Amino acid sequence: MTGYDLVKYFDGSIAFLWQAPHSQIYPELRRMEKDELIRAEEVKRGERATKRVYRICEKGTAELRAWADTILPPPPERDVYRLKAACFEWASYDTARRQLTEYRNHYRNLKVHWQQDFADIEALRLPLLRSRLASRTPDEAEAIVAFKLFAYRGLLGRAKAEIAWADEGLDLIDRLESTGAPLARSW
Amino acid sequence: MTGYDLVKYFDGSIAFLWQAPHSQIYPELRRMEKDELIRAEEVKRGERATKRVYRICEKGTAELRAWADTILPPPPERDVYRLKAACFEWASYDTARRQLTEYRNHYRNLKVHWQQDFADIEALRLPLLRSRLASRTPDEAEAIVAFKLFAYRGLLGRAKAEIAWADEGLDLIDRLESTGAPLARSW
DNA sequence: GTAGTCATGTAAGAGGTTACATGATTAG
DNA sequence: CTAATCATGTAACCTCTTACATGACTAC
Image 1 (cartoon, chains in turn purple, blue, orange, red):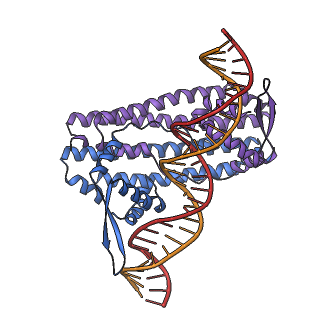
Image 2 (spheres, protein in one colour):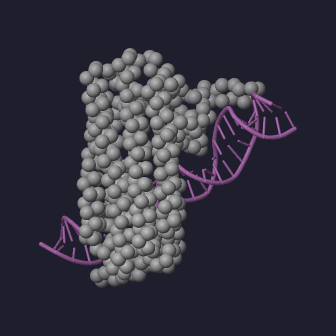
Image 3 (cartoon, chains in turn orange, brown, green, purple):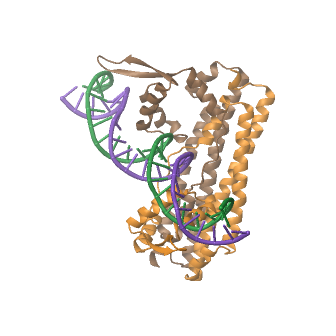
């Protein structure tokens, strides 16, 4: 792929799993080329212009394997939305409500996309995945697909949990507001 | 509080909600002081040494209110664990299993702490919270506590979802391994 | 010719991690 | 006197975001 292909790729359905702007992609490709993880081929386009088509090479595959075969330590906890919710007394009921509504909409939206991706993987509708499976035995192909589906089930689980949480918060806000307790705006 | 007090605070139960190393705390306090969000008082300790005790001031409270009253845009998706799970065919069964086991243990651990914190908030066992509630009406106090509990219910929901997901993955790995499909190590 | 897409960068700055570094005070 | 704790920094580096910047190609 070229850098531009990757930019488009990260704008597509993969954006719901991992995001990367072009300002990160181009320098990173150069770095990976310098480290000999990938190799570039300069291809003519039109009269004067060229593009750089990258391909993974041995060292890159080894690096991927090494990354996959490494246990990732748990990330430091830093959950801004939970933190903000814990501080809702400093906001107005209206802002708290709008915050949770947007949050819920965001995850509803993600959920739809993830469900679509899940279905596409299950039905082997993705060209990139199909071509990868072509050179594998049926057992291997099954495992590859099963792992992707497993990852997406995780994302869907998160989406469901987030939506339920936001709903609970919206109920709470209605309940508190009806009791008439003022929040920080009026302290 | 002094910077050191905050360092200790972030080492305590709050670490399960938000983490910050001392190398971030001290410069940040200086920045906030420069911006007049907080004010420092130099206090003697022992013969020669002093410490800087910080207190929030008006502009700081306003900033907190402004932050709370702003709708935070959803974060870009970047879920390394789901991404790694989607690439488990590049790992060995053993590493995949160990990865999920550690992940599950991590969330089991967090769950215990979050449950403890939830109970402490509910029973008003936290001194800092109690002192904050003292100057509020019962309605306001109820709202403040309710928001904290709501935030922790969100964390607990996440913990439960993550543990269930990891369990599902461990089952999947056992099932796939027993079918005998080799993973990337042997390709 | 011009608008949209293809294509590729750089730069400043925010936020965070890890490591380096120092010295006073207090409890035993 | 010595170890633990109190106390406070700096620096290099990484990742990511936002903004700035440019130019060729292609379909109309």
